[in-house]
Image (cartoon, rainbow, N blue to C red; front, side):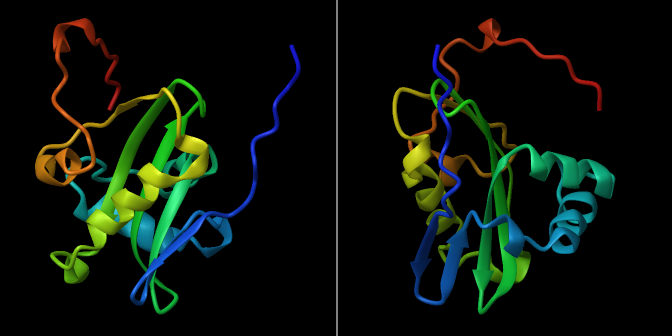
Length: 150
C-alpha cells in the first residue's frame, strides 16, 4: 500500500476581525494551558506538558482577534474515518458574539476533514452550539465504551 502524505498547508478562515488558523506557530500555549487547567470543567489541573503533547498530536485551530489568541479547539483524527473534537473554548470576555459558531464552521469546513467520517465529542453545557453544526446525541450510547484514567 502506498503511503499518503497529508497536506501541511495552513488552513485559515476570517470573519470580521476574527481569524481561525491551523498555523501551529501562532498558538499561545500559555493562554491555552491557563484556560484548560484553570477555567474549564473538563481539564482542571491538566499539566502544561500534557497540554503541549496533546497539541503536538492533534489538528489544532487557534482563534485570534488582532493577533491575540481568544479561542482554541483541537481534532484528533485519522483524516478518513474518525474525528474527535475536544478542548473547544472561547475566552469568556469574547463569548456570546458568534465566535464559537464561527470556529465550529471553520472546523467543519476544513478540507482535510471532509468525507465519510464519524465525528464525536463530549460536552456538559454546549449542546446547542454543536447541534447547529450537525452533532446529535448518540443513537445507541450503550455501544460506546471507555477507559477513564483521569
